[in-house]
Each structure stands twice: as structure tokens, then as C-alpha cells.
Image 1 (cartoon, one colour):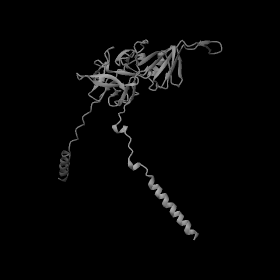
Image 2 (image 1 turned 45 degrees about the horizontal axis):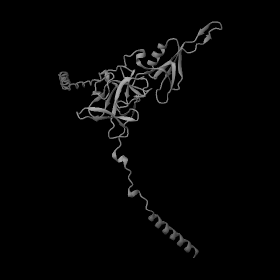
Image 3 (image 1 turned 180 degrees about the vertical axis):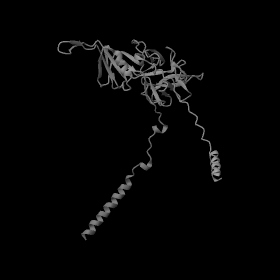
Image 4 (image 1 turned 90 degrees about the vertical axis):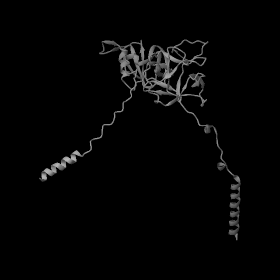
Amino acid sequence: MGSNTSLIDTTIIEAGTPPPPPPKAVKPVYNPPNPMEGLQGIDAYISYPNLVVNDGTGIQDLTNNAWTCVNKCKSNPNCKGLNIIQNIPQEEVTTDGYNYEQTPTTACEYVSNISYSNSLVKNENSTFYAKKNNLAFENNTPYLLNTGNECLSLQKKTDGTLDFKSISCKDYDNVTPVYFNTASDTIRVGDEGNNCLTYYDSLIMSNGSLQKCNDYASNQKFIYDHVFKSLRPIDNTTQCLWKDNNGDFIITDCDRPYNPKMTMSKTTTFENYYKPEKDDYIEYFQKDYSVDLRHYILYMILLLMILYLMVVSSKK
């Protein structure tokens, strides 16, 4: 009888145990499409004909097949680009004292850092290939978009639409911050709404160039060229963002021939955005911090009098 009671009690306890909590809802992970993931070979690089970029590392391979160098750099996260220098002078080297072999005709120089410290040398036998990436930017951090001593500003037109304009970078009340989304390679402009930089072939950038940000829109994706410091469309890196002499922004060939009648600049730099408070312009000189010399003079007089009295009393 006792054993049956124990069995009944155990059954009651098990039945009264609260059920396990329901599993937490799985939060979907947002992974915007990355157009650079599927790039192969040279398509994964921006090419710079007739250029050698040197960062001082001096890492080099001699090869008869430049594609091995391209793939070697692509698979190495520390490699930012490489020079492929062809038609280098060939030398004959002996292998056993009698048989001679020629050295490879191509030199690959690997570059691990692309910045202002690089030296750029023209060389008609060389092409520099820089990896396509925007990893140098802080994700969704405000920047100033400097287009050559002038910064980007958004101005509202009478019809309510937004227009680009270049103004002094020190005009803190009117310059517009931009935000580089490194996950989707889009550039959000300003704090009003969700507007991204958009291009349409070679149309003037100020006409319809701001559209609602769309991670799936290929014409909203940009690559920053750290060698020549310019913005390029991600699907056509032979094009650059230029500012002409009217202050308009256009997308056109990066290697435009010089035209003295049309001053243009493709220099684009992203600088830290800073908007000072109004109090930053004012220097306060509070009375509490001023020096009143009258008190010091009185202290010195009293001190001298005390010293005089001490000397006189000691002589007595």
C-alpha cells in the first residue's frame, strides 16, 4: 500500500511540473546582397594602367603566369592590391653549370597598404590592381564628403525636392553628413529621411540623384578608389564621380583628357564630420579667474613689516 501511495505521489508531482518555456523567436539576420562576393579574377579589382604603387614592403614574385598572382592576392586578406609589371629584362641563369634557363617575364609586387603614404610611379609596362572594398570606412558613421576644398550640401528647392550644392567645409550649419553603409556599399546622404546617392549612367548627379535607399539597387552602390581618391560606381569602375566648373556632379570616364575650357575634379575625400556648438566660438574670461594684484601687494607689505619687527626685537 505504501509503495502505491509513493507511486501516486510521484505521478502527481510530475504532472504538476510546469511545461518548459516556449523557444524564443529566431531574429532574422539581415544580410544585404554583396555584389563583390562573386567576383572572379581581374573583375575583383580596379585597374590602373601604366601605374606602379609602392608601399615599401617590397614583396615580389617572378612568374610566367600573372593569374597566379591575381588569385594569390585575392585569397589573402592582407593583400590590398598588386602591380603586374611585364616585359621585364630577361636574364639567363645556369642550373647545373651547363644548362641555362630564362627568368620569368613578369614581376608581381604585392601591396598591403593603400594610403596617402604610397608612392605612385608611371610605368608603361605595369598595371596596378586594387581590390574592390570599402572596409576602410566606419559603418554608418557621419562623414563630410569633400569634393576638393568644398563639401557636399543638400538644399531644398521650392518644389520640396533636394538638390546638391558644394559649399565651404567650414559652413558648419549647411554642410551635410553622409553615411557609408559598408554592408551594402550604399551612401546615405543627410539626416532627413532615408535618401541614398544614386546615379543614372552619365546624367548630372543633382537631377534625381537622391532616391530612397535600396540595398538591391545596383545604381546605389559605390566603390571608393583610395589610389586616386574618387567615388566609382560598383558595376562600372571605369567611371568616376566628377564635379565640373559649374559645381554640378556628373558620372563620367575616370581618365578624361585634359580640357582647359572645362575645369573638373574627381577628387573626393571622406573626412570626419564635426559640427561645433555655438559656445565653441566664444571664449569666456570669468572674473573668478582674473588676478587682483592689490591683495598680493598688501601681503608683501605685511610680510616685510613682520620681518622688520623680528630683526629689531632680536637686536635688543
